[in-house]
Image 1 (tube, rainbow, N blue to C red):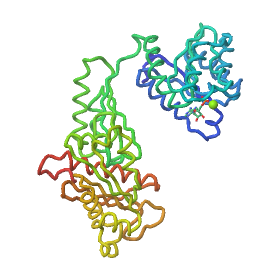
Image 2 (image 1 turned 90 degrees about the horizontal axis):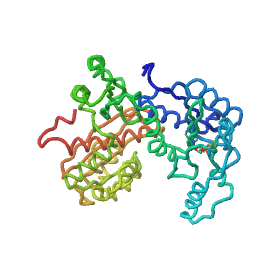
Image 3 (image 1 turned 120 degrees about the vertical axis):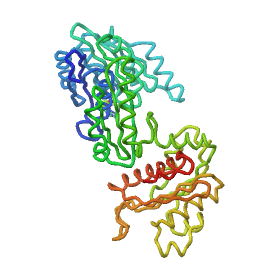
Length: 426
Ligand code: AMP
Ligand code: MG
C-alpha cells in the first residue's frame, strides 16, 4: 500500500480512557483495516484525551497534512464529550438543534420505555452545514464537515455503533468521493486451526513469492491463523486469485476449516444440519465454552440438542456413566474418561454426535505426566468413538479457547471425512 496515488486519511481516536489504558483503542485498529481494505492509506493515527485543545490540534494538523480525518469518540451526551463542539468551532459552523435528529433520539428512548434525559439534546446539536449520518444503533449520529481545508468525519466511540455506521454510510461516501482512485481489490480467505503462525508460514514459505502479484497476509489469533490473499485489479484478476488460493489450500488443507468468513462452530453446524444429525456436549475444562459458541449461532436448536458441564468426578459418573474405577485408575484427564464422557453423553441424549473434553487448563492441577494444557478430546459419531490428546500453551483462558476450537475441529473432520477415510486424523 505504498501507492503514491492512493487517497490518504488520518485517524484521531478521542477519549481519556484510551490514554489511561482503561480501554484499548480497537476502533483505530478496526478502521485501519477497513480503510486499507478499500485502498485508502491511513497516513497517521493519533489518540487524544477529552480535551478541547488536544482535539482541536489533532484534527487541524490532520486536515493540514492529508485533507481528510476520521474521528471516533467524544460524541456522547455528557460534559466530557467535546468532539462535536470543538470540530464545529474549528470549521466555524455554529451548532444548531436538528429536529429530525432530536426526534430520532427521543424515539429510541420511547422504544425503551424511558423518558429522554435532557442532556441527550446535546446529541441533536448539528454544526450548520454538516451532513448527518444516521446511527441505527445509538443516539449520537455521525457527522461530516467539509470546507476548503478538507473533510472531517466524526463517529461515535461505541464499537457496536461505529462499525455499521462506517460500513453503511462512511464507506460508500468515501468510495464516491475517491471514485477512480480506489483500486478494486479481490480477496480470498483460508481460515486455519491446529498449527501456529510459524508452522503455517513454513508450509507455504516458497509460495509467497511465487503467487505475486497476489498479496498474502497471516493473521494469527488464539484459536488459529487466517491466511488472507488479495490482489488489486478488476474481475480479470479472479483467475490469478483463484489459482493462488488453490495452491495455498493444497498445502494447508490439514488445517483449513473454511474459506468463508465463518466461525468454526458455524461450519460444524452447517455439516450437522446437512446430515440431519444432532450434537451433544460433555464439557470439563471448557466449562460450557463450546455450548456458548454453538448457541451463539441463530437457529442452532436445529442441530444442537443439549450439554453437560461435568467437573466433579461424581458428576461424570452420575450424569455421563463414566466408570468410577477408571476415574480412580487413570484420572479425569485421560483417554478412557474422554471416550466414556462422549459415548455416555451421546447415549443418554439420543443424539447422533457427541463431543467430550477433559483437560488441565491451569494454573494448578498439573503433574509430571500430565503437564499444564494437557487435554483429551473425544468424539462419538453413531457409536464410533475417536479420542486424541493435545497439549495447549497459554493462560487458562487461552487453553480453554484452544480446547474448544480443537474439539469442534475434531468433530468437523469426522463429519466431513469421506466414508471409510481416516486420513483426517494426522
Ligand atoms: P464516547 O463516544 O467517547 O462517549 O465513547 C463511548 C464508549 O465507546 C467509551 O466508553 C468506550 O467504551 C468506547 N470507545 C471509545 N473510543 C473507543 C476506541 N477508540 N476503541 C474502543 N472503544 C472505544
Ligand atoms: Mg468518550
